Image 1 (cartoon, rainbow, N blue to C red):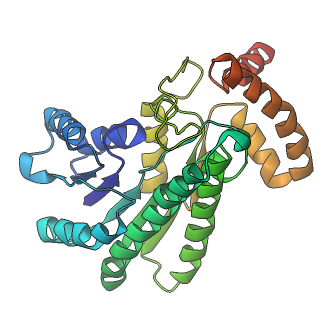
Image 2: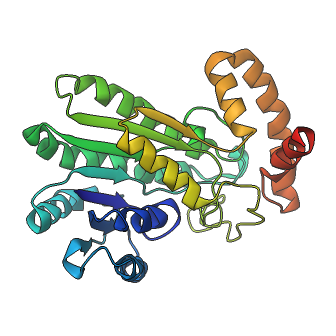
Image 3: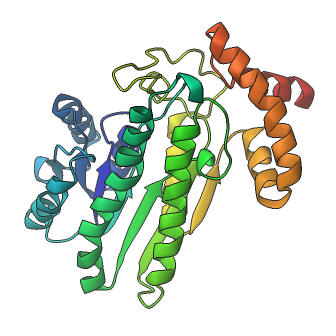
Length: 289
């Protein structure tokens, strides 16, 4: 199989490349940082199941939508087909609305939403022609719920969920094309460090304590199980975020009340310089123990 992974230079995308390489699939690794992609490629080759010809490093900027058609043609020219597109590229945000430039929200929409939609539209005709393929989008629990400090990120992820749920319906006449939304909760990665602050030129620059978050390897393992079983939507998270997500789905009035309570603490954590979500996990673990 040929799997194209965007955002493959770090975090979930990087770990996904490693685990896929052990399964012997052909890989297309895309992100903006070529040197990081080359590093990921070298480690994939060290796993022993792939050869140089099985991995294509393809630099890609999701916001440069004019380049997506040429990138798709390059993959098809190299491997002849695209079996799975994993839309993983994106960026998060940590700042209050009143402290955030509109340019930050614009960039999040252009990168997380429009960039993903653009690339999908370029790959989709090929899958329709073959009447098969998988479009896997790494969304977020925050594409289902909403929390303070990340409202621009939440908006971009809600938009993605709406788009791909609608696209799945449009493709109902092509049962061989699977559209899957993967919604992870907090995962150990660089997503917080690279999150936009109040301006597009500023990032948080610090991940903080991540010991309470799900390991990237476990998250990706569960993603692969989901992909293998053609699941339409998957929520992957430690507690209490998984519980809160169920409340948002089935008891929204309660969820709003709880989110308001948790949201105040999230803002306090952020302002004091600790991970915004750390206290939730500690409180839940203490009560659970």
